[in-house]
Each structure stands twice: as C-alpha cells, then as structure tokens.
Length: 184
Image (spheres, helix red, strand yellow):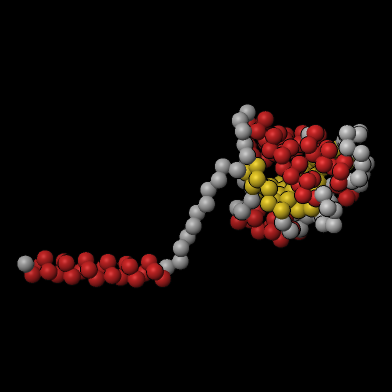
C-alpha cells in the first residue's frame, strides 16, 4: 500500500514536471514538400516583366526536369536576393539557385557547390544565367546539367526572354552556350 502511494506520487510529480517543461521548450516544426525549390535572383530589378521571366524559367526547367525523370516533378520558385540564396543553399531552404544577370556571391565560389553558366550567343552579360546547386547529390546535379540547357531553349522561356529584352515575341530564338563554371 505504501509503495503504491509512493509510485502514484512519483507519477504525479513526473507528469507535472513534463507538462511544465513542454510549455517552456521551443517548438520545432518540420515542413515537407515533394516540390524542388529554386531561389531565383534577377539582377535587373527595374524590369517590370521580371516576374514573367522568372515564372517562365521555372516552368521550363520544371518541364525539363520532369522529362529527365520520366515523371512529374513540381518545381517551386522563390524570388529573393543573393544572401537569401546563399542561406537557402546552405541550410536546405532551397535545392538550387538561379542567378539571371547577377554575379555570384563569393560564398558560392567553392567546391561545395557546382555552377553552370549560360551565356547568350549575343554575349549580352545582362542575360548571363548561373545555376548553382550543392555538390552533394550527383544524380540531382546530373539531372540539372541536362535539364538546364534544354530549359533555356523552351518556348515559354524564349517568349518571356523576348518580352524582357523588348524584342518581338516569336522572333529568332536565343542560342546559348552552357558550360560548367569555374570559381570566378
């Protein structure tokens, strides 16, 4: 009888301590998504059709990644700044980043990241595009390596690029030179 009273008292004390501790402990939230997250940084902040160009590139890249994987792969874009992209790539907030007409931050110029650089045949540096991804998943990097050049040729992206650069939509397609970028 005495033991059961002691056990009951101990259980009551433990539950009170646990309840009090749970109120003061920080809450950790875990979010999950099937979508691949890309941070898009556009160096031409003043252009009113940036949103259309960013959305078209995301759509085109999503289509090409899905084609490479032979199944639908949703790609979600987050528009941000260079520091946002560095943080997102470092902490897993995004899976890769695209810099349109913007230089790469020095924090991404190391062997932890793989960089692909696309230069328009015109040589216009305003439209140089970098795709940067963590160098941790070789299969993902290989998928991006094949999808990136094809996404640049996509009709959605080509039309948006023509609008962005004030060219006539439906005109001549932009050709691109894509290569692995060095630590510039």
